[in-house]
Length: 146
Image (cartoon, rainbow, N blue to C red; front, side, top):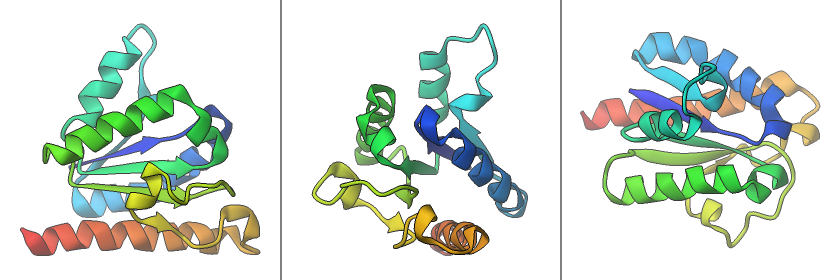
């Protein structure tokens, strides 16, 4: 089982935090967590991204105006939508990272959490804990379906 994280370069610090908090989840559920940050020098990035996107269990957007403006992130999301329609991706969700207008967009079709963006949380640990709890719900619902 693989979790794929899509993020804009402007949100790399937050993506690294998500990678860190998902380490316990990866041990508990036997899954791997992947982002383009893990592409080794000399590898074809488009090929690596496609390989890791295809068949991932959970596709996670780090939702921000920068992600929505990024052609690369849009290409990842469109590919994830196609793969989900084909049944090759189980779930798509977004972490509500920074204030942006996603209502009425493709992103609005899937769960977006938490309700308040990171900057509006007085306690950033609480924000990341909320994110982790939502991802755990998704993973546990899959275990129940099995």
